[in-house]
Image (cartoon, rainbow, N blue to C red; front, side):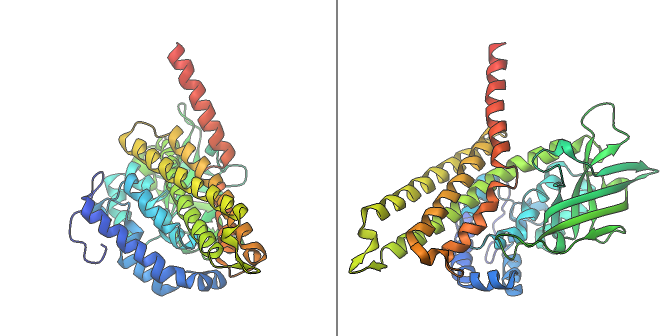
Length: 398
């Protein structure tokens, strides 16, 4: 629980005063404790342990987990406000607890049995266990239908075989939320099931940390499942057909969250641009007085404001149930593309200095490039949006 928070916090509705206090604490933590240590995080490729402990004490490992399981219970409307604050600093901070609250934790929240929730969610919410979402593999990223990892029924349990790649938090995971194709294939459905696999299960092998373009301190790695045997109680929801729906639902929710992170990062890039333009000189002139510099800053501001409004609308539609498919993809597509443009303009405003390591906008430029890739690439979002609208029109016409 966040320091000083005694009021019950439970989705879908949290008292506005309580949530304002939560948001204020997170903003203070991000801007006064994490921002000053961004270079330390980048150079060390790790979140310092004292910052991790502070985040856990604030309840950040479980802010989107229901209160009955030890979390704070923020819904997606509140989640995106938090995400816009978390996006203001190194994205590795959010990544540290992002899978617990997001794509991994929400599979359990939305689809787990009571026994599965009781076993895992309290430890996930406290940060004692890091949950890792194991979907992506060579040939199967944005489209889960291409999975090659298999789960074979064996007696009263299952045997999982296959490999995953680019798995966030794999090096520190306590449990993997693993998607696999059931063998033999069922008569109905697509045959994709999801399992809870403890990281210390025999046959689980985690590879070395990936060397990435950016987001230093956010660890990803390959994960291999070598005939990993799990019990029947590892099957999420107790039914194989839960898997595909769990993946799609969790990813859609995650897309709105990623869009909000993008807005936070874009706001930071804009703030850095304005501060630099208002103080840096070319000759005797402040560069912010130049109209072309002002034009770049205007484009940044327009992107940030449009993205923030879009994220809030998409979150509202998700929570109300009005739109949990097209709106999340629209928000993710626009905001992740927008932050790339804003970050590029920030480097341009800074000139040659913006290309130098240890300058904030250089790190932001590299960090935000990944946002267009995970939780479904921009190309996949376009297919979801365009195909969804055409299918709606066909249904209306018939």
